[in-house]
Image (cartoon, rainbow, N blue to C red):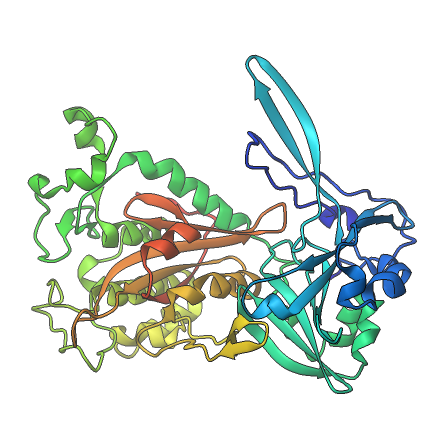
Length: 499
C-alpha cells in the first residue's frame, strides 16, 4: 500500500465553513523529511506525540480539564494541534479524548456586495487524515482505545484497544469492521509514540490492507463512462417500463409490446421543468428504470456486436426464489415476475462478459444460457466485513451477503469502498429488493448502476444512475432505507458508446 511519494498525497482536507461560497483543499508543506512520515505522505504526528507524551497523553482527566489547546510544529514545519475533548452524552460521558491532529486549510471566498475576498481558513479536524486520538476513562485515566485516521475518508481508520498486556487492532470501513480484534505483539503504550509507517509495517500481514488500498489503481475508464452517460442524459426521457430491444424498438418491459407514447410518465419527467416542445419530445429516447440500466450496459454490448442485447433474453429467469413462483416464458413480461430486475441485471452482466471475453464465448457454446451468470461470476457475493460498529465497545453481526437477496443498503457505502479498492475498473448494476409489506410480497422491482472511484483528493466518489438521473450514494441510500441491493459486476469499457 503506502508507496506513493509525499507530493502526490500531501493534500489537506479543507472543508467549507457554513457561510463559505467556494472551498478547495490546499497542499501541506512538502519539504525534505526529518519528521516521521508514512510512505503515503499523510502527516504523521509521531514527533509531536513523543514531545507531549508526559504533558498530555499520560495526564488524568482532572489535569486536562479546562486546559487550553496547544500548537506544535514538527521538524519540517507542519503544525499540529493538541487538545482534550470532553464528551458528556450517552456512553461516551465516561470518556475523554486527547487529540493530536494536523492543520488543514480551506480556501474560502467571502462576498460582500460587489467585493470578493479569498481567505485561507485553518482547521484542526479530529477525523482528518493524520489525526491520532487517545480515548481514556475519566474516573481512572485508564486508556480505552486509539483511533488513527490514515485515510482521506474520515470513516476509514484504525482502532487499537488494550486488553491486559495485549493490544488488539481493528480496521474500520464506513462503520463496519474489515478486521476485528487482531492481536499485536506490542504494549499498548508503544502506540503513543510510534509512527504510522511503523504501525503499517507491524500490521501489514495480520490486517487486510488490500481492502483499503487503491494506490496503484486506475479508474480512467470508469470516469470516462460516467462522463459519457452524463453527456447523454439530456437526450433521454423517462417513460416507465420502456426499454429498447436488439432492433432499437422501444418496448414495454411488462408486456413485450411496442411502447405507446401515451404511457409516458410526464409527472416523473417534468417535475419543475418546463414542458418540452413536441419536436424536442420526439427526438428523445424513451427509457424506464430497467431500460436505463439496460441502455448503459448495451453501450458496451453494442460497441462490440453492433446491436443491443435482446430484451427477451435479458428477462430470462436466472434463479427461482423460494418465495416466488416459477417464471415462465408467458409471465417473464409481467408484473407478476417478482425478480424481474434481478434477472435483467444478471443477464446483462453475463452478456457484457460474453461479448468481451474469449473465455465467455467458449463457455457460451455449451450449457444453458440461463446459468451464464453463474459461470462468469457476475454476482457480487464477497464478505469483506465481520461485524458492524455500533459503539466503540459494542458490535453487532452484519447480514453480509444474503443468497438471492444481496446486501443491505446500510452496508452499501462500505461495500463500494472495498470494491473500488479490490476491483478497480469495474462498475456494478444492482437489483433493488424492497422490504415486504406482507408475507411473500418482497420483489425486485427497481435497479440502478453504481460507478465508484477515488478522486484527486483521495476520497471515494460514487455516482448512481437511475431513471435517467445521476444521484449521489447518500441520496440513493436515503431513497431506499431498509432495502437490499443485489450487485452484478461489469467491466468498464474504453469504447463505451451508448445508443
